[in-house]
Length: 194
Ligand SMILES: NC(=O)c1ccc[n+]([C@@H]2O[C@H](COP(=O)([O-])OP(=O)(O)OC[C@H]3O[C@@H](n4cnc5c(N)ncnc54)[C@H](OP(=O)(O)O)[C@@H]3O)[C@@H](O)[C@H]2O)c1
Image (cartoon, rainbow, N blue to C red; front, side, top):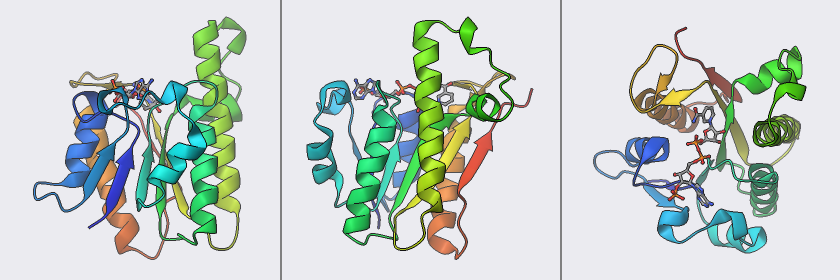
């Protein structure tokens, strides 16, 4: 049985679908949710204290995008904490958008056309991707990081969106694979059919 945490709500949306899958029908894993619903407004949290609170977990799903490099700062602080604690079997799952690859690799996104909120989102996610890759390269005893890159998601199936249930299924498969295998999946990209 794994102790899992997620920065998301068990009451609605993609986080809910993921939590249900990860816990399973017989609650074979437990999942603690950290979001406004459970009294955690992560926009105003002391991250060092938060990491102290979640350090006992086995798996952390770094889901809520937050502001001002929130996801990157959380990733780095938890990775350092688990490194010091020698928790090299622990896993951090990081959520990001698949477009970030294009932005880094091909410069296909004209960032000058983005409004401030989209620009901030992209820059946050570029930093997150870069940090993830750098931490994954570190040799020695460190927690593992799995980066999940997604195209647009929707509650219901449409051809240009990935259904939430499918994302949740994939997270569960990756989860099970991680603990059953000697190999590591560093990143995976899911895109809609068209
Ligand atoms: N949506 C997409 O199409 C899409 C596509 C690609 C990648 N992604 C990635 O998937 C992740 C989730 O995206 P999302 O679109 O679902 O939106 P999101 O706003 O990043 O996440 C929503 C979740 O965060 C919680 N939340 C919102 N504000 C919060 C706050 N101030 N403090 C604590 N928790 C808060 C919500 O629960 P409460 O209401 O209980 O606070 C909810 O469960 C992100 O990392 C995003 O980059 C999403």
